[in-house]
View 1 (tube, rainbow, N blue to C red):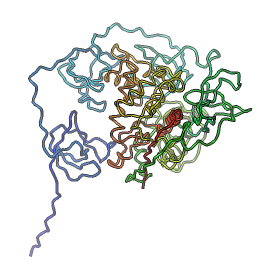
View 2 (view 1 turned 180 degrees about the horizontal axis):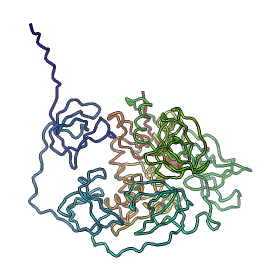
View 3 (view 1 turned 120 degrees about the vertical axis):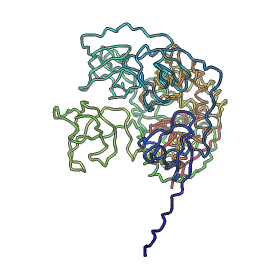
View 4 (view 1 turned 60 degrees about the horizontal axis):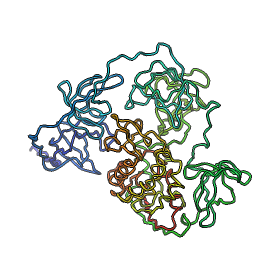
Length: 627
């Protein structure tokens, strides 16, 4: 007799529909925002859902299988709005790119598919503009383009005369490094970063960009950061202090209540006073000699009498007792899992590491020099593929060789200097900054757990004279910060500290004003200033937000921080940086204010010192706990 085969149990599935407000929904290879995109699904697409877990759904649609974010699936098919009978108001603009073409994309995203390329001078019909993108029609095609490259007047077609003789120039940036890009536009990819004083060969110059040759390769840099003379010459003043390291010695001012400690320009009681420091102010100590200490505090550097510095702070800052209430919040993740999630999104640091490249990734030009052999090479934090990736290097890039060692994989590895300011942080450094136990009992660093939804009731005159004096565009703006904090329920001390950090103490281009479409815009908190295109993207955000005065930027930026972070639960510096609740809910790193692992630590000393000016206060802290 024939035995019937047992019937296979069918997999239970449900039917849902794609429901996105605009653009398309990415179907990915696995349940991760960093996974490869399989296809893009339009609004209303019918999908078969096999399973849902941790915010991701395994689905089948259009005969393809993959994963999508469950947020954009609904049980009912979304209704497509009927076209309005009122004609859409449009404007006419023109494409103006310094070179090459402008990509028209399928949606308002730099990762969206390219519909066509538009040449300089192309006339376009603009339907709408939002978040730096314009919905347009050109050459009988519709799509989206970056608003930075659209202007109301048609660009001149007069050819630019390029220099025929190569010219030697030098990188001259006031701080940080200069980005070399693969195209003459701030949205282009960064090839390498150049330190101040690096010699380059200028091949041509056009529309504010210089085509240069450096380290054996070519690229483009903004011409304004090149000079014909090498910086740091005799007529230039040296930097007053080395950059502040996170682990630099911290001490505290100890004077009688109501008194101040004078910070002087040089180590002498007859020297001019640079600043007056209140009792319990935290200072960074660089050196101590003959009864004087070279210190920095509140953005200023000078000398103070060592006898008025102590190693430990009072239980609370300021001249009168304060109250500290600690609350602990548990998250369903281990600290090691949090580290893994941050490593997956390349958490950044300005710390220097020993970096290594495999022997076949470099061509030796001498015993101490070499050039990168091809594209796609990365350098690691140790000699072997099991070490984390610190950063990437480009083809023909020149590297200084420090040593040669046998790696864990049997290859030889060269220790090299990649000359980059920002790199991928090591797992150990990420874990140190993630672990609340390293900061909870520190009198200064514990301020990253202070809830930022409460006002500090500052004295505007005192803050202007002690903190904002000499701080560029932020000078005298204490009352504006207080207004912003009161209006949107954000701690005014935090707003001041954040602005001082993001604007380089009130001196950065975004803070002092950038011209966009003929109007000067300001951005005090670095909002929308994405890594790699900080000035252009931050300025475009400010333009779209209408921040045409410093005051508008201070107050408008506070609204962004309040609505995007403070009022949604990310109400401490720690939670703004790491978002443990988001990581616990979705299983990946999401909605983090910064990529720098030291972002929270770099702000707390200023916040602590601002609290030192108050007569009394109550502090509420929310400290994370991991499994």
